[in-house]
Structure formats: structure tokens, C-alpha cells
Image 1 (cartoon, rainbow, N blue to C red):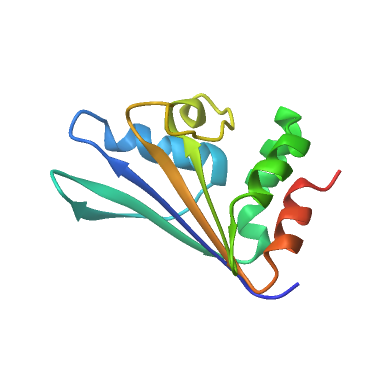
Image 2: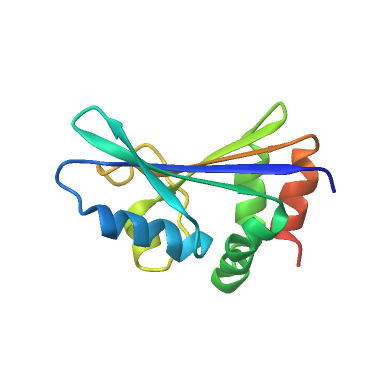
Length: 130
């Protein structure tokens, strides 16, 4: 498969604990290196990865949660050109659960995931393959 670039971002609000937000991200994506970037009154935790192997913990989580079919339908609707942009619930991720974020979800905001690939359909197929 072609080159895959992944960016993960989560706003850390002034009322949130930076380490808990980092744990939320790492519970889904493994031991990703995160940098804190100033943003408004708080900051953004950002992680960058390359290749499908970076997405392996997410793939295993979708399998463990038994939500591959629902994830596939959700992710296919999130393809924008050569990118897949989707959001995960921070609180659920902290509890080691994968829950896709919908605007009426947690007031804390989501973990945003941006996957860039020449063939995003193949990435979705790989992530959700049984």
C-alpha cells in the first residue's frame, strides 16, 4: 500500500489534566510521541505517525470492541479526497474504549485523527478487515 501519514490532535482545555488527555490518546494509538502546542488558553497535544503499523493499535481496538462494520461505515463517510478525518471521544478513550465522537458528545471535545493516503478506501478496508 502507498504511504500513509497520520496526525492526531486533542485540545487540552484549562479544566483538563494534560496527562489524562495523553493517556486517552495512547490508549487508542499506543506509545505515540506527543508534543504540546500552545492554543488559546490551553494547548493541543499532537502526535504524528507514518505507515499502517502506526494504526495497528487502532485496528486491534476496533477488532476487540467488535465494531469493525460500524467503524467501516463511519470511516467511509469521513473520506475527503485523499484524507480520512474523524473524531474519537476523549473520555471513552481514557477508559480504553473506542467511541466515535459526534458533536452532541462530550463537552470536552474530541481526539481528531487525520489519515492521508493516495487510496483512503484501502486504508479503511485494512483497518476494518475481518
